[in-house]
Amino acid sequence: MSVEDAEFPTEAVAVVVVGGGNAGFTAAHAAAVRGRSVILLEKGEQDMAGGNSFYTAGATRIAHNGLEDLKDFIEPDDRHAMTVVPAYSVEEYAADLAKVTEGRNDPALTEVLVTESQSTLRWLSSLGLKYRLMYERQAYERADGSYLFWGGLHVGNVGGGEGLIEDHTRVAGELGVQVRYGQRATDLCVENGRVVGVAVEAAEGRKVIRAESVILTAGGFEADPRWRRDYLGEGWENAKVRGTPYNTGDMIAAALRIGAAKGGDWSTCHSVQWDAFTPTNESNRELTNRLTRQSYPLGIIVNTEGKRFLDEGADFRNYTYAKYGKEILKQPGSVAYQIFDAALRPMLRSEEYEMPGISVATADTIEELAAQIGIEPEALAKTVADYNASIDRSVGFDPNIKDGRRADTTPPKSNWASSLETGPFYAYGVTCGITFSFGGVKADTHGRVLDAEGRHIQGLYAAGEMLGGLFSSNYPGGAGLAAGCVFGRRAGALA
Image 1 (cartoon, rainbow, N blue to C red):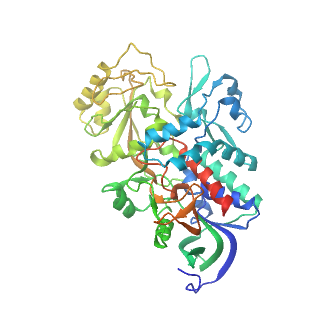
Image 2 (spheres, rainbow, N blue to C red; image 1 turned 30 degrees about the vertical axis):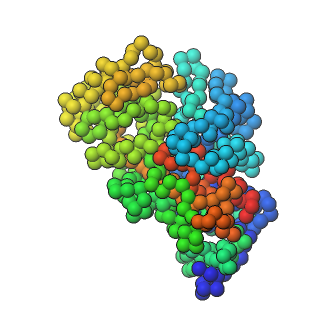
Image 3 (tube, rainbow, N blue to C red; image 1 turned 90 degrees about the vertical axis):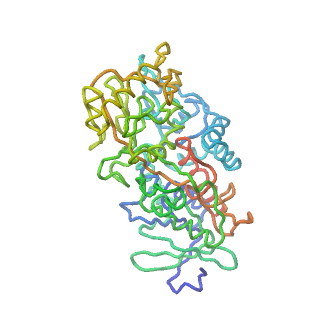
């Protein structure tokens, strides 16, 4: 639409950012420190703000040279003296992205992400965001009281996603960014082929905000059941929405209407194992990320027929968790159960497996457990017996490394095979929780949105989950927040 066509009140600003999550705030900060006037529009009211970022654990994947390279911008902790944090090089980061996406990640976007991830977090830290080592998620305490971090993902925000958004909001205020809640952007305003503003709906009515630059950080389409079914496939309309209910593809559609090209893989998404039976298991602001179930590499996962259907120990959970939600969705009733015994139970993440109202069944025998969860007892007992009998017990169990302790059954379990022998036994019901869609708009490495011919649509930028091209089929944990920071900063530095 053009500004002239809009018969609504108009105001002007240098930069409009559409979407108030991690990427949007980072873009706003980057523009504001350059002296630009910035309005950030958030679709949710203040008590529902923060986009998907609010619902995360705050984990952010960056390249670094080990603990000494991190200490000057992470919070001090007495455990640092007993902690080993392996270096994580830009080459390893790029290789992990290529591995989990099967080479479908955009190489130019990847190079920028891996090389600028640490410097961008340092910049955000200098503005006032707080980071720490994520002991409770990324390290197990060893027998001597020391800690070894694993999986390339070591740093996160103090206070998780809630702390991330709280810090971003405070910094935005300090920098003079106008944060406006309950503002739904509906259309991009175009004059002579250039984006010059956005049309907005709010409680006070409709208006147009003119701007020299518009930065789109309004997320993907995962909260819209129709879009999920149309692009991800039949059955995806039944997935549970982990994060914000406001990521319904509005601004992706607006960008496409003015000629933006689609970017990335529109047929896949980030999806995880999610509490199946808690009544409030969608967009839960109180429990947020605690509804995930991510200690699955330690036990086994069975469907409602009592059968295993994936390799729980294929890799560190950082490299498998975002694709296993899809595998749950394929199972009968889109439900499965994570099974553990009394020996494994103390190792499960307390924040997830001890949350209020958790869906769990407990019994002294496997057969009794099966009866509680509606599985044929003989079927589950056979699965567990076959699994236990196939474990290579000559290899020691060590969850801090890929230990090669294998269960040679069907499907195999490649690491961390620990027999389920000691009662009581535990079953946690899981379903598919969708996090974000991998398809978005196409942009260059500075976030400049491109049309079908590869030309920059003047005045229009994108970052965060709207930027397609980095992920496909799977995802390395913590790369989403890192990408939001890196490409949000890049877009804001030009806008």
